[in-house]
Amino acid sequence: MANPPDDLLDHDYDGIREFDNPLPKWWLYMFYGGIVAALVYVPYYHFGPGPLPREQWAEDMTAWWQQHPPPELADHAELEAMAEDPAFVAAGQATFNVRCMSCHAIDGGGLVGPNLTDEFTIYGQQRDQIVAVIFHGTKNGMLAWKDQLGLEEIYQVGAYVHSLRGTTPAKPKAPDGVPIVDPTPEIAATAQP
Ligand code: HEC
Image 1 (cartoon, protein in one colour):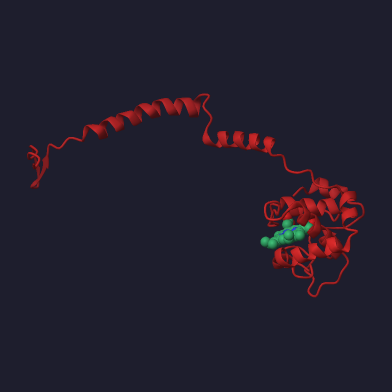
Image 2: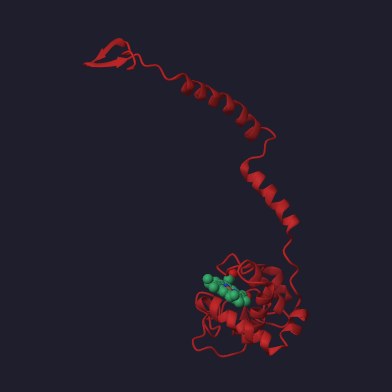
């Protein structure tokens, strides 16, 4: 059955007429409901005790990190002991040639990423410093590998990177960072990745 025709309102603007066609009730109730919800939401969340999504997210992330602490990375001495096995370093080289050469060049001479063979370093050249950079990445373009590589692989590739220092790459990139002075704990202290 067709709806009965709506009443015409009596105004007329240059021949344009308007039907008396009120908004449907469901729409109006949603509209009023929206106003009421906003009157509760804004004072509670923006001016009251309710957490905003950003705060809630930060809280959830903090809780998550407390339940999933990052692994304790091996220290310099432990890494040094691992690197005594040539097969361990060779495995690191295999990973480097797949994952790292696009930015550091196949021989570590540097492309987008810094030269890993020269006598300069940004984050320190000690084994634990190298591993920390590979694990966590840095703000300036070095990727974090903690989700792509296992801890063992990170230690292996770290051992290989450490072995590159002092080698002669085909096209060495100009130095980045500070000259290496042994030992360099102050670099790690000032330049956290
Ligand atoms: C997308 C490019 C890219 C890839 C891939 C990459 N790196 Fe880097 N890497 C960089 C950049 C850029 C820096 C300099 C970061 C900075 O200055 O904060 C860097 C820095 C480093 C440093 C610190 C150097 C120093 O002087 O302190 C190490 C060690 C390192 N990368 C190792 C690796 C290893 C190992 C891999 C592979 C698992 C890898 N990188 C893959 C771009 C990359």
